[in-house]
Length: 225
Ligand code: SF4
Ligand code: SF4
View 1 (spheres, rainbow, N blue to C red):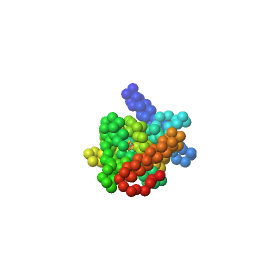
View 2 (cartoon, rainbow, N blue to C red):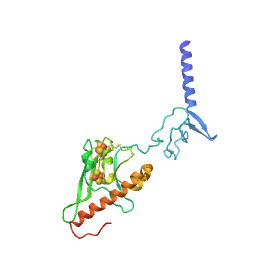
View 3 (spheres, helix red, strand yellow):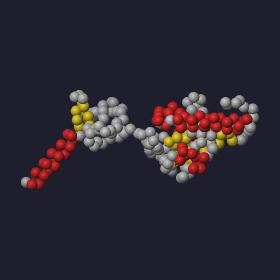
View 4 (cartoon, rainbow, N blue to C red):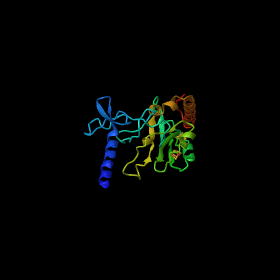
């Protein structure tokens, strides 16, 4: 009898926890406790997967499970995964000058690039291509710290898995390029900071001077500034 009683009590505890996982949201629909505005969706409605990002705050009650990928926690601005190369929305110009500093400071040596060439065959300060081996990158952010042209930044995208790792995990310049608008959107605090604003202005001037010098030594070119 004692065995049977334990079984019943155990089931009741499980049932109580199941029921307490949910609460009625605004008198209309069931929501998971603490799970933000996510509805309990037993029938897989078409809106599934479009739920907003949820966040655990001081007011969140109890412990809850984030049902990734249907919902996800907010990614914080300084969260960093892989580097990206920034081009300016204003003129479409890539900021990188192919100076190779990021490749030199990268601890596991997973960055490499090729220089573009001017009409006379001499290198000009623009990368022809740029590669990062995402399986080797250890997400340290040193490349972004050391870049003198504000050209390489750490991105927050962590959904990088796929079914092939030999070719597709070597990111080329086309995979790495993001617009300055994208960076401003994902890093609003850094973008608006006085430090980054002055850094951007200095880097842009420095880059134009380098480009001007390289191109004028290889022939008659228009001034960039
Ligand atoms: S340090 Fe910056 S400018 Fe130099 S190659 Fe790397 S990304 Fe380009
Ligand atoms: S984040 Fe670190 S490991 Fe990754 S490419 Fe930059 S310097 Fe190299």
